[in-house]
Image (cartoon, rainbow, N blue to C red; front, side, top):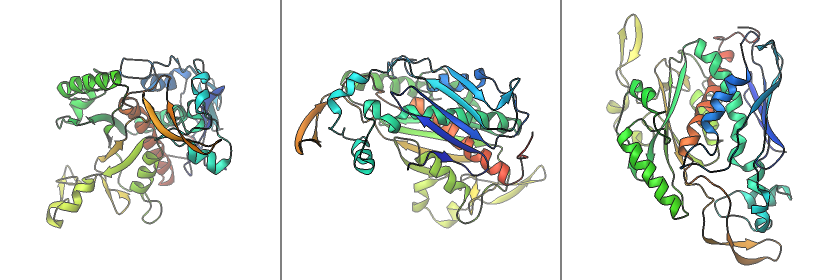
Length: 363
């Protein structure tokens, strides 16, 4: 069996496939009393929707969502919430030539060998399109967390070798929606967009780095051994397709500094204990310390590229060539920002209930 559910108190089970009838999610453990409409979820889904700019896949999906359970008069009633999105623009014939020929960089061969059967059109259940379920669950979590002033912001800080300048959180929020790249450094964003369009013409792809900032998380989320908050956040982000690395706080750079440089010294401001720096990324010993939680994810280049590539023919057991056709993102980073926000919001929501900051039954 595959693992399709995440969370302990606030759980999300996703379903569907890239070229199937529909995709969606069932959320259990959401307290009653939350005002929730289709439009609430639609606004978030529109951020990750394909075909919205020249730098995304041109698959034309409106991703219209419909809540089919868990609310009464647009208010959550404490029962499982299920929301569904029907596929409308799948072109499965583009994958007919790949039936027994696993695509390099994709999980085709892993699924085929593990399960003995594989829904190959569009990558099936392994497709990035399945993150629709993440966004549905994350939207519900976001609405509740916002009531506690917990705000999550994800933005692109690098595409290929192009890096953005360091920008404060206020300017990030003001600028990320001004370009399709979702980079707050507008000068760098322009260069990133040009680079993505250039690589698209060549039939190739680019990766990059996305930063996620979670503000106003209370001190005390997370368990100290096997359910560390940073461990759960890292797992949630690594469970997003194309993510190949996670950094928390100073991350890998922490290996090259001394303890005196790494340690965040405490002081008191407005009767609150905070730190002068935030190298820990807002988490100490697996428990939130009240500072902003800072995360970065490394996103690999989209594996669906044009041009001939070598692979194996599983039916004839020989080496062969394939050429992928269809509609694919030349860079997934801009669209993955919404998914990353959703993933971490689900984790924070789960831990808020578990730590007693949110009542499990009603708001």
